[in-house]
Image (cartoon, rainbow, N blue to C red; front, side, top):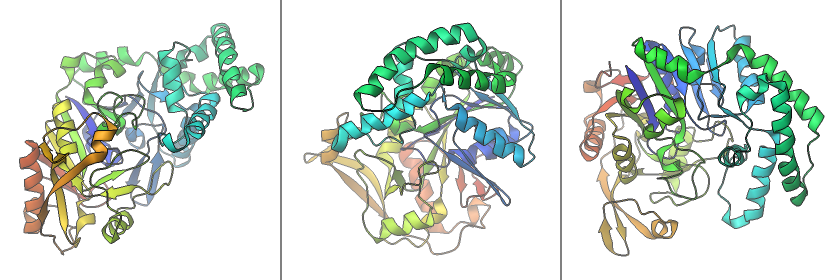
Length: 424
């Protein structure tokens, strides 16, 4: 079976936990897009793994982890995370696509320079070099992982890239890069990663024919999709399940199930419109209880009520079969528990997500209120044991979205999970 996990909001929905949870029955876990601008935290007993370059399944020795062609790879970050895993004494299996693009140091420099130039119009990137790397990929100026194993070709590619990038850096008053030292560093990276580099598309297609269980995970959430998110406040790739076949090099018809991961409320990091955003005690309570700070940046996340217009938008785009509701426990005892069930734009009710930022900024949420629950639900493992108010909240979400909730998370650890509908 081929499963795809997709965040239904702006990221940080808890994909890492669900990937780890479902990964117990997987043979292969694939990261198909994005870079180390999106983190996921895996908690196993006393050990906590904050990952941003490695797939979530790296902590499971029985899983083959794949970094696919659609990913942009920060090799120094990857090596740091591999070192962390090795120091814990955990065996792992890792394959890296020879077609994945490399985030170069000058990409990081230029990311910060672009944001500084934009000032109040900045996108709110993590300044990790993701956007500039995807820019160079589209402009055919990128350096790919497989190039590291071809020293003479790498020399040609790096020389032509630096010709342009050093000129850009000079324009911003930034320090330029020395060819020899950067080339030497890339050759060293190639030696370190050589055991893992391969044609991952060929590997995955063979695994599909062998009926392996494969789970695809993306970075960020659907509303940061370059095509269908809140453009221009988006990422530089598409986290949608629709993009998996292209990013991983597999046939579209091979995907069996798409699972949407959603928070029981809404958060966002960075700039851009946020229809249900809160700036009150409720926001502070949710942020504190939910530990709503970026895994990578440590920035406090913006917090708001659950926006079901956003989730339905992404459920429909990707044809999701079910959703996993995360962090339900955070809402325990929250007064005035509202859910956005519609939008009003210039006084008219609409049933879609406006495409322009100016329209979104004028949108007024239509709320439905729900009674809260006060019982501690973190130890609940059977759906029927949840308070009736929590079940009412969940069942309304299912009804509104038109898809079932497959599982509900009530805590950070792997087993803090209620199975409502068996995915297997």
